[in-house]
Amino acid sequence: MIEAPILSVVAPCYNEQGNLVPLVTAVREALEPLQIAYEIVIADDCSSDDSWNILQTLGAADRRIRAVRLDRNCGQSAAVWAGLQAATGRYLATLDADLQNHPRELPRFLAAIQEDRCDCVCGSRVAARARGDSAVRRISSKIANGIRNRITRETVSDSACGYRIFRRECAARLKFFKGMHRFMPTLFRIEGFTVTEIPISHHTRLSGQSHYGVLNRLFVTIYDLFAVRWMQKRMFRFEVKARINIPPDPPAR
Image (cartoon, rainbow, N blue to C red; front, top):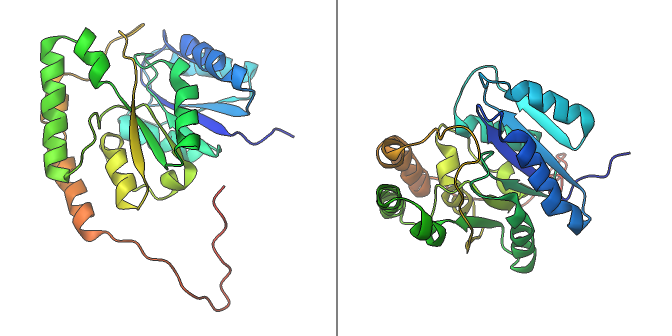
């Protein structure tokens, strides 16, 4: 019988054939010293390169490597969502497959969520980008985060960073929509969960090409911003006080 994982590492993937083996190797190297049960869940967003064949080979060699493939290219939010639905761990970590935010930091995230007793820990690339990114990327990222925070009344310094860890209860209450992955800290807070940030390193892409540019950061998300603001104003939480002939909700894993 396979031990239930403590941690599920979820990575969306689109045309990342050159990064998948290094990604899996890096996750293993980061987590093996912790001696915990873990799994790696990679969601392939219908890549047009050899990514799926590589994932099949990796999965055949190690049952802890699990993968799903979307029927068509649907975008990062759909891939993240599909990966989260397939994950079984007590804690769920998300990171991009391009190794710009390195898996070696996973133990820091796991320690932070366990020691701080919060529900979600988000990475912040602000300090690292100040040292390495071009002026255009730094400015566009700062403007994008400023606009998001102004409209959603948030204080997250790097809301677009995909490096996070959270309790599976958080994922259970997520509402899926296109662009969801950019607003997960805010969506968690809407549901009453606590969120904190820790600084992380930021590296150049190991292989392949980035799927995002300045326009993605500044203009593409405007509809999503107002949708999230609407959710903040209209959604609310409640608990069932009593039941008749209805079993209680199962406890969160």
